[in-house]
Length: 91
Image (cartoon, rainbow, N blue to C red; front, side):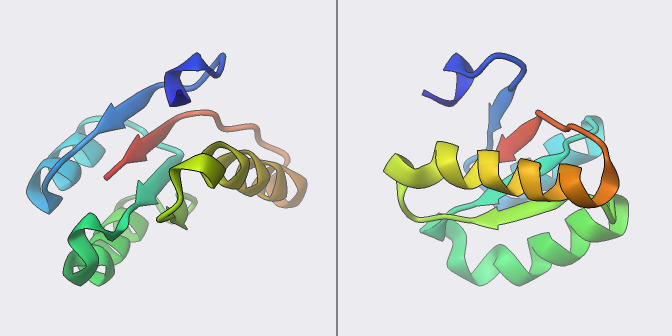
């Protein structure tokens, strides 16, 4: 569903360690944090924003609204920074 969006490249990680490793390897503009690792969200937020202060972090538990949440977050960021980012990482 996410990869059906032109310009988006979805990369999934199933553990916080895997998410951190993948985040370090690429220049992700958006990271989606799901409820699967609730206890790790604070740690991931700190690490991701330290590496990329401009990263868009989204916490989502509703797959049906995820595309809308991502699109709206990107649009809000574009209005404030004049950049259009369409890469994201799902954790």
